[in-house]
Length: 234
Image (cartoon, rainbow, N blue to C red; front, side, top):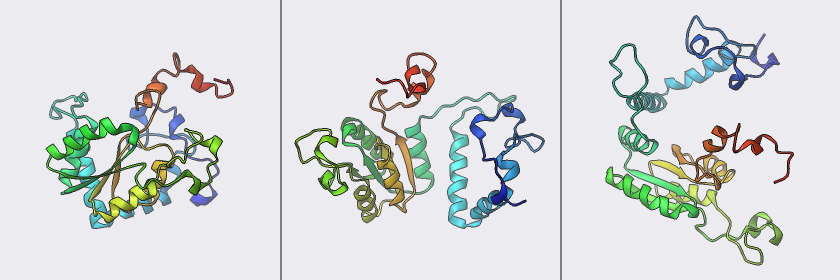
């Protein structure tokens, strides 16, 4: 039976097998029905074949190398994870490993204060930084058919976020590596759709939690229980 005939979709998020005993981590491990490691071998083979490309192999090699270097004292046995590097340090080090020189920053104008600090840090690591904010171009929301009552500031010719312009502008500037900082849900998707340049995310937007969306997840059994009940009006 080929992959297309499989009716049970992968559900790794709800896997009940203890992590050390999972097939994705051990050749002697096991997985539930629909486990992609067991039921999507054709897709796996196609994916692994991509690493035969020299550039992709190099990129993946450096990513795995950077992953390991984020932990200290790996010579200790038995080893207990000791993470030491923040996301921004990890990003800078990976970019250095790849030999990148020009960094593209696509950011939300609501993070103007934060992006200045981020830019300073990248420059301190020796990178040239090209940055484009979400409102660059001052394109009206009329372009995408937003009515006045759908605007944030009603009664104004409100500028829309333009991630397509951000992506194309950074491509035009011939940056080596894009960093996304605080783009809205959906806008980040459009950016990724319209860029061919390697891109990573430093932080995502969360207007309530100070751009730390995991805070709501960690408190979903207590202070943020409301997110589990979308039927209850705010």
